[in-house]
Amino acid sequence: FFCNSFEYYVFFNLLRFLFCFDILQRAVLLFTLDPAERDAHLANEATKKFTSSNWILMEIACSRSSHELLNVKKAYHARYKKSLEEDVAHHTTGEYRKLLVPLVSAFRYEGEEVNMTLAKSEAKILHDKISDKHYTDEEVIRIVSTRSKAQLNATLNHYNTSFGNAINKDLKADPSDEFLKLLRAVIKCFTTPEQYFEKVLRQAINKLGSDEWALTRVVTTRAEVDMVRIKEAYQRRNSIPLEQAIAKDTSGDYEKFLLALIGAGDA
Image (cartoon, rainbow, N blue to C red; front, top):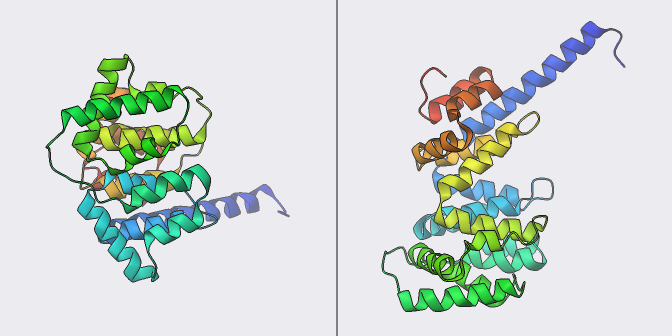
């Protein structure tokens, strides 16, 4: 196909330039969109055949506040002329649909009030179902998908103290089970979102060739939310600053844009 190595070199670098330009355009577009419009766009992408991602749908449902998620659903309805719930139900199947539809449909209480008696009883329900490997039981889905973050935290604390293990440790019974991975991510996204996003960034950067789509998504959606905590979590976990990791893994205007969004100086 190529006559000589120079032609191959030129062609390869042209492809690399076009890709870098495309990913920079995507980063700028995502960051400049209104947050609800941005999440609606990402959610719609996540239901498409070639970009489908249960993880992105979960991320939007679990890391946004109730009011933010409601605004996402309004933006989705206005932009795509159908509901987010409708598309999630249509484009997911089985146990994933059973979990994701309630998550995107929820409007959680955002206050700090907690019912400790309820937390204790629901911790036992979760432990019993998980011990029996009934991971998709309607009671598990109900508790995870409807309780406020404060109530869920109280329940999980009771789980840990009463049964000796953090719930996510018990959910690693089958490390290769993709549904259990998603369920663990749901819990982490609710309870310690900075650790969830640190892991997404770590996996994106450490991947061979890096995962620019994931890197772009996290930086653009969290830059004005909790990036300081994510950077702290990244440094603790990886022993290097996030700025340094991004600078090592990216280049050009794309690198400069990401570093500006995370509040970096010279990396």
